[in-house]
Amino acid sequence: MNLTYGQLLGSNRNFRNLLWGQVVSELGNWFNFIAGLGLVRLVSGAEPTAAAILMVCRTLPFALLMPVAGTFVDRFSRRQVMIFTDLARVFLALIFLLVTSRENLWIAYLASILLSTFGAFFEAAKNATAPNVSGKEGLLAGTALMFSSRFLLMAIGAALGGWAAAIFGYKVAFIINAASFLISAYSVWLIPEAATRETENYELRTTNYESEKIRRTSFLTELKEGLNYMFNSRFAMTILIMNIIWATGGGAINIVFDQLGGVFFANEKNWNPDTAVALLYTVSGIGMFVGMIIAHRIGTMVELKNITNSFIGWTLIIHGVLFAVGGYMPNLWLVLFFVFISRVIIGVEYAVQETLFQRSLPDYIRGRISTIDRGAEITMFSLASYLAGISLYTISPQMLMVISGVLSGSAGIVWFLRMKRDEKTSFNNAKILTEA
Image 1 (cartoon, rainbow, N blue to C red):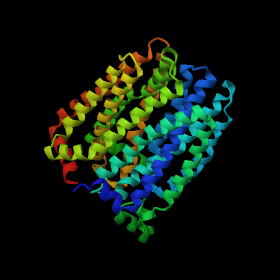
Image 2 (cartoon, rainbow, N blue to C red):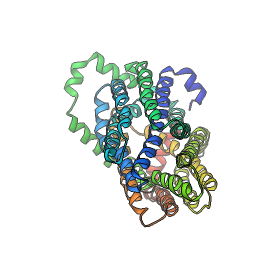
Image 3 (cartoon, rainbow, N blue to C red):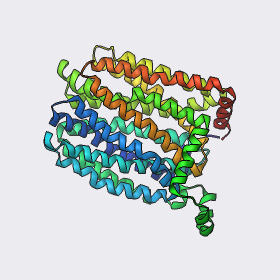
Image 4 (cartoon, helix red, strand yellow):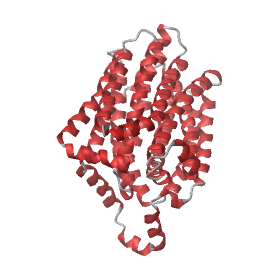
């Protein structure tokens, strides 16, 4: 049985604290993101490569460190990792206050690299913790709430971040980001250590420490174990390949939003650049939030009808087509409409896909597999962001949006091809989702 949102929130204090910590820190992160993009755009004279470099600094360290972080949090206290990384990011968020000219843009890049580095360890610990905190019956609702709140905060944070940047300047946004990490650290501190692991395994470690000490292998061995699992599990490898393909197009989204809103519509249609960019992120976030919220009902129906595989494939294709169509729209409002619909669809798909994936992973290795997948996806996302920035010297932001949609939608074709080769694997994975 899948718990409803109300049942999970009403009965699970630890999940509420984890969710609240994410909500506050994500809100601050979006203040930082919008302000960071605006600051770099301002001091660089709207140079496309400056925005592309910032995106690489925000994503590539995160991606490269995710497998290491996943192995780390499978070995050590996930709760302590989250608290320490939150406290470290309080100070890192304030480094942006030192950026005042093109000559010290490197400070913004360095601060982004450091925030990304600590963020990788926080995300690894949180993602490995969430299934244990929510429980099997609450996992679908928990996954939808964790991700829907993230995308709702994309909408609210982007809107408020754009407003704060336009009215109060960028410094206020960076200070708010720093404060948000303090609140997040306190929320995580309220969660008991035992709640971050499977109860049976946690009790074994705490009551039979010497046996655990003898059993434990080296860090590199456990990292290799995670890689072996990923490459030997057909389903895990399918998820990995599909997410990498999606990221070839998805990586261009941030550059599209920055240049389409902050440059094209600002120059051609007299939009305030921060407002236009914030609107694109706001609508995208609201769309993802709506998709995640309705995912519980739709996901349950999809499970009961045993059409999980076809649902994932078609929603990936359709969301990409709609995003590509948005690139042909003559005004910002129509672009926002197609972005919204596309994000609703991918929001539902992602909640169903992630729940299926998490339920297939054993707890002892979940941190490693989740982060290997996430790291590979964001590595491609980072590379695609940089290539997208360079491409704007020869193509328009609108054409880049079309290409982005086509590439990200092609992940659905990859999904169908992989599933068609092994119908038995497809059936067994759908059964995991319905019976867990």
